[in-house]
Image 1 (cartoon, rainbow, N blue to C red):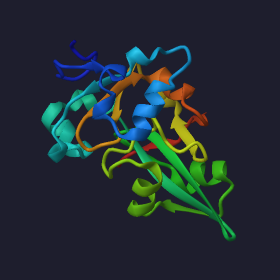
Image 2 (image 1 turned 60 degrees about the vertical axis):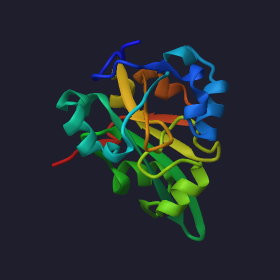
Image 3 (image 1 turned 90 degrees about the vertical axis):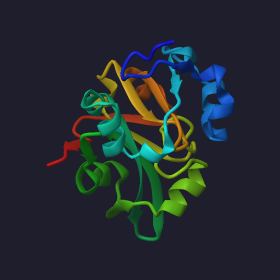
Image 4 (image 1 turned 120 degrees about the vertical axis):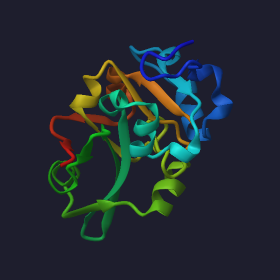
Length: 187
């Protein structure tokens, strides 16, 4: 099957290729419910050497920049308490960590989570973290611009491979909070 975005000729419904996903992502696809059916979550095989957004877009075309999203893990601190959260913003944007994210988490300070924490706690690979299958205790902040995009390319949980799913599916992920202005254009 041809993917609805990008130049990917071999898009597979994620439920048909669970063995290519990390365990938490595969479990989330298996348990998927809601208005967007799991069969609309597509997996495309990609080269792990070009997983980083800038290189990926350079290789697969600039049209993907506005149709892809990044998922970053942040740690909000207030006193002794630390809250982990994931932020999903379009690839041409950066999460407003010191404004929107800090206010939403009720944190005094927010920073990007250490790589070991992000990968260890999520069960996913660095450079491939996806909002599909994140730990239930994490807050998931999603920029409204992602939800409003017809099809969105995002990590698959591994550096090899990407997921493509309808933007509205991000709003149905467990714990998702959709926010206007979460992403700010990169200058």
